[in-house]
Length: 453
DNA sequence: GTGGGATAATAGAGAGGATC
DNA sequence: GATCCTCTCTATTATCCCAC
Image 1 (cartoon, rainbow, N blue to C red):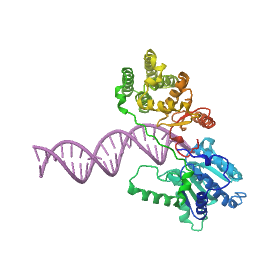
Image 2 (cartoon, helix red, strand yellow):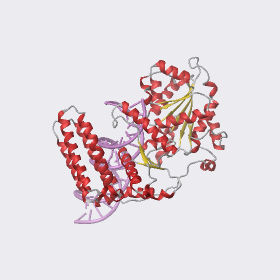
Image 3 (cartoon, rainbow, N blue to C red):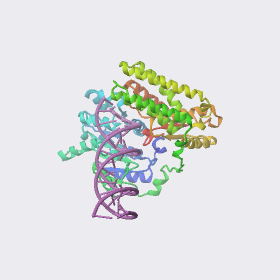
């Protein structure tokens, strides 16, 4: 789901009819704006920031307030901060975990709050600020919640609103912030039809706001991203007709998995980790086809060698080097089937082949930019490798340059330093995609909502 | 390392129908 | 009436990804 032009482009000077309508409403009461992607929700937020601007002028220490915007993901926070910064004359700063905000003390926060009138942050960061009492909800004049449908359960956004509610309950004179919730999809989970009104009501209560949408439906539609949907079917049972070679690889991997699970003197967690890696390879072969499976084996082979070297537990190191040796053997078996690498197209699963077909069809288009969403990081990595391979080996796919992007998570990328580097790289990837340096971006859920690509 | 949400897979409970 | 099967709904568990 992409946010459309309005949120990234140069500041809009003239608000559209429905933007004005919703803005007028939000001026008067707490509101949840329900507007489709590309309709310029951020612009309404900007108008509102300007409307309440007299409250945020001046020194925080001397009682001036601040405007806070919270969002769900790091890229979204940065993007919103940038967009707002372009349209208002105040200092706008974005905050997320990668800046080390977790370790900031009161003094550091005070300098930040003193310096910047508009703070855009990941919901968890703002919640931490509230919990540490670095700022009180009453010192905020306007709280903007982006993708506010996340304000449910125990999500950080919900916790922020619980803080708001408790202040409201305990102190009737407290000057609470105006709430502005922004969302394109009010409910984002499977539910029964009869549950909808309850869920909507819950959201209104959690946000202490009223759900509103524009009367000028046609006008909104004109400015909303309208995708044309085409559904392609594929045959999942094609796995059953897998080549003998693939079946052989899978039975080897299964054998290794069994050996690992039955190994003695190895911690349960370590076993689990190794089994997961083996499982990933098996899934790669089954879901994506032999070419990707082979690539996965090569990748993990190198990875395993590195890991087993750094392992202090001798039993574990032994097991890992054994697995590594068996992977090398598997990779050797693959090398014998060299033709797999000559034309990958003949060695992919059915749905990947449908995907390649779509990519192929776009070759004549003037400028193609494609986003491919996948479920796991692993397939993101493999698919982009596949497209790159095709680009280099087949003229008809010369336009299929690709990279992948996934969220940051310490579990899969070692220590915090690596994570941070990784984050920087992701930002660079996204920027270069926007510039049009390459054509296909394979992504997990990180880009699913809000991020302007 | 911890916590959270969404979702898929699984098992279990209950309703209803078919058969003996 | 007893037994078996199927369908549907629900609760639990596991997995994945993302955040700090």
